Length: 150
Image (cartoon, rainbow, N blue to C red; front, top):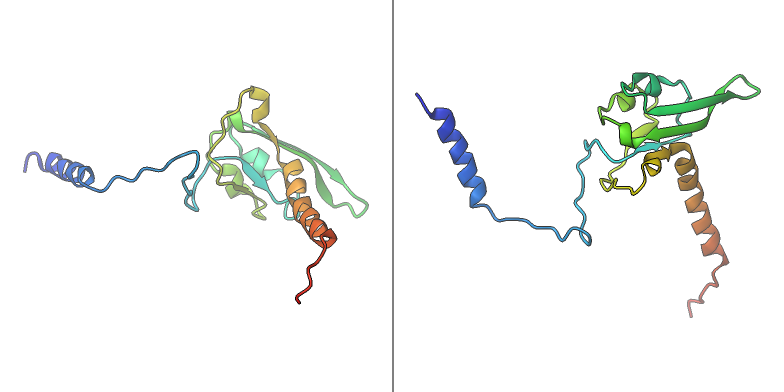
């Protein structure tokens, strides 16, 4: 039948036209991203990372620069892990290539920066900062005066 595709398309359009519209007040209310969202910046778990470099080799644009070192037991570790988000294709090859699932996408979709240099993210430094934050909070809680229950 001629026009069957057109009628199906118009049916979908009419259904969406009469649905209730949902508007978010963006700066105050942020959209929650689904689990499979690819975007934002890379989150690195430096405890899981074995410094193999597969993520950097899998990247078609070579936006991941990592340097490694070796300790006394001949085990490799990261000394720097820089991700250039301005050049990233968000293809997910780096996340798929990681054998230990040490990197993943964060759910932050606000990536606007004023200067291009701010698009280079030091993932290792951010990972170390995130690790230190809970320790600071527990130290602050320990120094606060406690109230008596009576």
